[in-house]
Length: 160
Image (cartoon, rainbow, N blue to C red):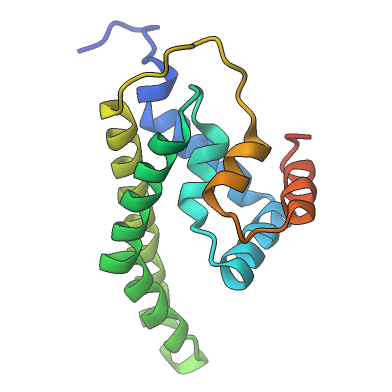
């Protein structure tokens, strides 16, 4: 067991990632932007959050590998749960809707865990001191996301 005051390396600390993702999601403007990206540009929100948080530089091939992990996760579980939740959104089904919403959140949490685990298995970049460029990460991962959307989103997320 860790000693009190010990902290995990940020890139391996899921709680640090989840706290970041939860804080961003709690902001109504940020959540609205992320949902807009998801619905209009097919952006995987969990992958976008992970890309914004991940504290180490990764190359294009490494991000593509993580995108593939996210796609497999979304098609195998999260997208199906989300589709079911959206069909249930009626007043007479509110308790069931809430239950499926909770299941969707757990699925998203598992997707984040899988991204972190996969990133931890990737070979490290040759230049650890490289600057993290969130704009470039998002553009690389989501080429259909317009540059203006990325710019405005990063401003809303306080990454300008």
